[in-house]
Structures are given as structure tokens and as C-alpha cells.
Length: 595
Image 1 (spheres, one colour):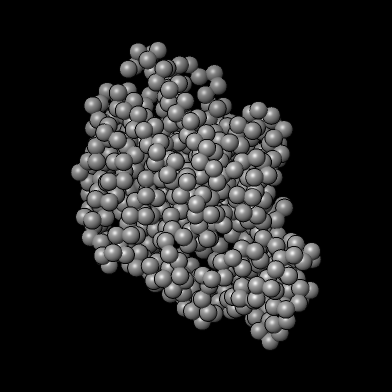
Image 2 (cartoon, rainbow, N blue to C red):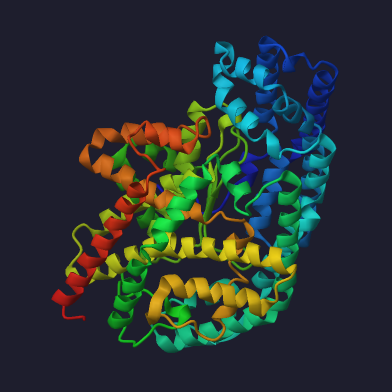
């Protein structure tokens, strides 16, 4: 099935039409803006509001804030981060996009500020039922909105006060190289991304050498990162103050349509279960024959799974697993693979890691991988394809105004699919391989839940410390970072020299308070997996969730399936599964005489 390994952007985008599309985009948005600036009867009359929202939806479907041209050049920039011409073109069209989008600011702002009496009338109107959740959320969050001119100013300054700072550090890191020894024994210049991979080497000399080089890169960039982080913290503090947000993480919760109390309960529950991650690292140190793990060794894989998984073999395995769940899933990923929507292999200048991206409902989903034939790459494919399936299921059921996944549930589909692929990998494995795979699974789950919540706690303390001091030195940031990393890692992981700077490359810290969603996503995913294992017919409920988009709040969506994410006991149930998995792994290690 796997017959295309690069994004075929020319197949999906017609560059010759970009200029024409840009003009049409501007014309249609201007027409809408002029119409409803002159006629604000949509604020008083439900029929007029319905007509206006349908026209807005049409604009969102065809243009949104990301035209084909914006999407095309963003994708190009991820393929070649070192090309200044691509970056310049993307910045140019992004500025145009912001300018166009600003013309529509007034519409939702004016609608948000109608009287409570009129709000109740619109929310109870049967003709407006389709848009009820959109309106409810808008009215609830109206208190955080500014005037039209103020909102436009915030939009216009977002690049210089945030985006350009963050992308600067990312670009500086992507250009770094150091000479280190690799698995073949050859010493040569290796990119920042290659060094990250070598940190997981089973050869201690190789991973220690890579860590020394990696720490040198971070030390080389920490002064710039200090200024960058302080700048974006200042920008956020100003924005939050203007909007009347009391907590630094409140903006994330508002954006994600989730109650702060739900996130607080999740964070507290995971923190109370840090002993799981601490025991895991103790077990890993024993299995690796080390008294303690160095900080950079926390992700080193135990065991010797020598089998390589080519991209083609990986796709076949993932496809088979998805087909056993539901044939629709396989049809969707076949489309990705055959239509040039997956970019598979590493190359210099290409974005590291992996991601799945979509923008407008009518635009294709694209997936980026850095496949190296490892067993972990199979799970990465399942994870990113899970996101892709989520996108395509939403496309079929939701209008453009609900074509979105709240952060709090964004990782449910991906971890759901990934876990079923892991079960396929475990099936039939001998005890040695099984132990290695179970350790991999635990490593991933603890990194997804405990590590991300430790990062969330770090962010909370970071923002509070900045608010109190007005500037944080690299040393102050480093101490806060190490404190929170030590809390979840425990006594069997050293906060080694150099680890105080590892916040420099952790990009999620700049996507303020995003990381809780990894933990919430996996724990909710576990509940949905249990449903399907009990009764395979429950896959229909999973498909219903995958199709829901932002049409309801996450809490209400899951209540339909008997999942109450506001209860501490719900989060404890998922953590108990991980505790049981750790006990199973310890028993197997003892059985094999490894500990």
C-alpha cells in the first residue's frame, strides 16, 4: 500500500491560482464585513442571525484564516526550515491573512456583548440550534474580550511579540551541529535532531557523548532562550491582564472549553501518583545495571529489539490493526499514504519529530514523520494517523465552525490508535521481547502523563515567578525546571549537570499550558479502550466522539458515553491501570532473573 513517501504538495495545491484566490478571499471578507457593519439587525433578530452565521460558515469553509497559499508555504517551511525565501513568503502571506481576518473581528465581538435577555432568546431558539454551543461559549467568554481595535492590535503584534521570538530559538537549534560518535563508531558532524536520537543509544559511551554535545548546544543558546522566554512571558502577562484573566493557565482552559476545576483535579491526581513514575525509573536503572540514571538516560530503551520495521511493513501492520477496529479507519489512512499526504524520512533542515496537521475543512490532512525503521516508529505512525482519522471523521459530520478539536481531547484519538497497535506488537512476543515492549509502553505512558503534568506544574511556577520578579535569569528558570523534573522522577534519576537547560528546547513550554492535554488524552483514551475491549460494538461510540469536533464541550461529549472527567475517581482509574502494568512488568523481570 505504501507507495508515496513525500508530500506531493503540487498535487493538492495549484500555485497558479494563489493570487486569484487571495483577491477573492479579500473581496468576500470585505463584502461580509461591509454588509454587517451597516446592518446589525443580526444582533436583534434570530432569522437575521441565522443568515449571518450561515454566511460566516461559508467564509470559514472557503477561506478561514488560512488560505491554500498560507497552508502551502507553512508546509514547505516544515520541509526546509533553513530556506529564507520560503520563510519570507510564509511571513508575507501570514501578515496578509492577519490583515484579512481582522476585518471580521467586529462580528463576534458585537454578538458577544448583546444583553443577557437576548442571549437567552437566541440560545433557546430552535432555528439556531445548530449554533447553540458556539453561541453559548461566546456568551460565557464575552467578559474576556476587548474592543475591536484592541483585539486587532493584539493580532497585529502577535508575530513580533511572540511568534518570531519562538521561531528564532527553534531555527537556531535546528542549525546546530556537533561532531560525535554514532552507532557505527564513526565520528562526524551530527544535527541537533540526530543527537536527540543518539541520546537513546544502548551504548552508554555513545549516549553520554551525545548528551555532552547536546548540553553544549543548549548552553550555547541558553542566553538567547532566556531573553526569548522572558519576552513571551511578558507578552502573555500583558494579554492576560488586558483580558482580566486571573490565572496564567485560565486562557488555555477558556480556549479548550474545559472547566479549570477539571484540569486542577487531573493535575492533583497525577501529582499524588508520582510514586508510579519514581518506581518505574528505579526499575529501569536496575534493568540497565546502573545505580542511577543520568537525566538524559530517562528515555533510553531497555532490551534489544533488533527487528527493523520498514515504512511499508509498518503501514501494513498499522492498517491491519485499524481494520480490526473499523474498516473506515483503514480506508482513511490508505488515502493518506497513496495521495502524497505523508512525508516519511528524515532530511537536513526538515522539522524534527512527527506531527499531523489540518487547517480548513476542505483542505487535505498532512502527516510528517522521521521514520528510522525502529519499532517506536510503528507506534508514531499509529499515533499521527490517529490524529488524521480524527480530522477526517470531523470533516464528514461537522460544519466548518465546529471543525476543530479542543486541546483537552486532541490526544485521545492518537493514543487510542497507538495503544491498539502496541497490543498487536505484544501479541505473540516471547518473554524477552515482551519485557522490552512493556518497558517501552511504560516509558511512553509516564512521559505522556507524569512528565507532562510535571511540566505543567513547572509552567505554573514559572509564570508566577515571572509575575513576582519581572525577569527570570536562566539559573532561576533552570532551578524551577529541575525541581519539577525531580519531583516526578524521584531518587533514581540524577538532575545531571546540563539538565538545568533542557527547558531551552522544550517547545511546548511556549504553547502555554498545552501539555496537560497529553495526560488527559491518554487517560480518557484508556477509558474508551476499555469500552471497546468489553464490547467491540462500542467502536461506534468512539467514532461518534471522533466526529464530534467542537460541537459540544469535552465534558458533555464524554458524559454521553458514561465518562465523567470531572471526578477524581475517573483519573485514578486510568492511573491504576498503569500501576498494574508496572507490577506486571516487575514480575516478568523477576521471572527472567533480570532484577
